[in-house]
Image 1 (cartoon, rainbow, N blue to C red):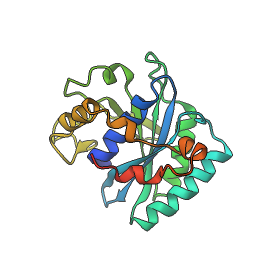
Image 2 (cartoon, rainbow, N blue to C red):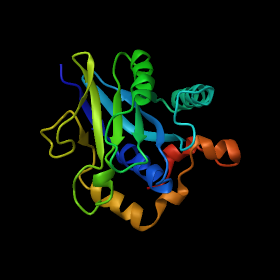
Image 3 (tube, one colour):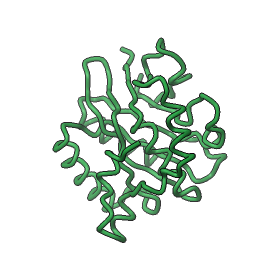
Length: 201
């Protein structure tokens, strides 16, 4: 059965803002949302790392804290996002797949991966997705073709029609400077990385 996924502004924008803040680093984080009968509502994101993008004890700590935070806000961890540092690197890394497999097991066998498309990321003036979503189907992670193109593509659709223009506005105002990840929190505990999910956009 096709998994229908609705993506909210925060879930689309926060991974891109995280990548913009650390353009020379791999970045990653989790996607939060809700399960529905036919798919996922991907509502927001929490940035994890720009240093420790491999599977480490730091990841376990970040996941546990995020899981508690999500439950307090009536949300679940529904996916993972990843951005490669190199513009020519477009392959979904194995470490991202491993983390998302764990998320899927804990989320009624549903999950989604966002891979930032670096080539498209450099030309945000176009109404084309800078994120490539992947869903699990036929025992493999499959790229969703032409995501967010129109309302007929229910595998990946926005809940707001003006998402692209709003994201362009966020970049114009350098909103990425207001994004904090777990790495930053470790260096400065006054930075509330979890509340990035509620950042005013």
